[in-house]
Image (cartoon, rainbow, N blue to C red; front, side):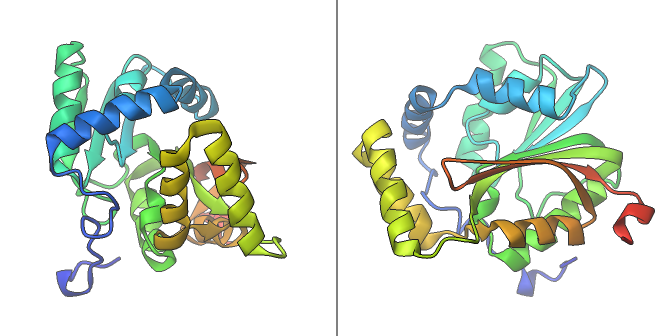
Length: 242
């Protein structure tokens, strides 16, 4: 773990688009509502991680709060964190308007959250960890492992690249072209920026990071074809030693 702030990666500086303006956050929220099927995403998390009414869930990189708002109907409590204060304020206002009282919103990131060990039954992270280079992904995964209860589940959905591509120029070109055909120019340009400036991890590296951090991978699935979804369990000492 890294506790000395002199060496700590600046998650806010490297988080991508600056959402310090709440008007930008509102515009982003409206745009994402059209682009995503939030209900389907929540159902997938609930079914995959076997969420139940006694669970306490941590959502990392919560954005405008749609995932914790959806999950709150299925569990005891959700703690939702994001490095953007504007995102957190917007998400909290949205949840308050909907009368969602079992969600707590906090400004924090993968590397700066402060929770007691073995606090959560489930940790969820969607499309946020690719803002971290692989070393810092490993640190983040170790921190997530520490705050999960024994046998706790970790649901990760993020940018993961296949490691068997013979020509990545062609791979990126084809991926962006397909995105543009389905979702339009803006999303395609965002994808270009993500491939260029952010920190997608190769599939074999992500699997290694998860296992080295102490997780047992229960399920893995790839789509888009650069999106990986992993359901992991906090491994026992016996499993980790294999």
